[in-house]
Length: 223
Image 1 (cartoon, one colour):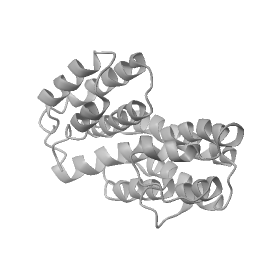
Image 2 (cartoon, helix red, strand yellow):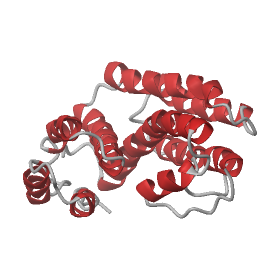
Image 3 (cartoon, one colour):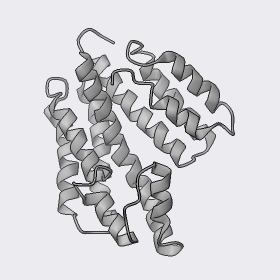
């Protein structure tokens, strides 16, 4: 890691990448599960919670769609994830341009304006803002270490979620390769030996999902 970023800032950058990617990817997954809940099984949200590894405290499809999206008191909700992203970004005002930060704020404002709605289509602007955030990271942040840390968090989160939802192995390997580009540039704060274990495990088509998720959770050493 470059000398210009402290461990505290590295942690904030890493989690900024994770939280923004979490909301972006989960909105994509939720749209698929929403259709299943409507057309096949209204309790499919139970499977969704199980795959995410979160407690299922919801008593209906409508309760899930409302509280998982909009309940600020629910630590697992998407609005909470965006709030955590915003909190981390606030600590990084010296590293992140106001324009880049604004896309997170736009996402939060739109989520809040949609509170109570169960139609996920109204949240498309949140997806658009998070895509714009990623583009702004590339275009507006000039320090390589800063970009690397955000992207390391982004691809680690994407890898974790795609494994949980049992995406094809070729997709997992693609995300693993994207993650590798960034964590190998920051060797002092990512466990390279653990990453090698992840790579070797994922090469097997019938890899142990629980083992890989456990290894991934320990890759970032500044905790």
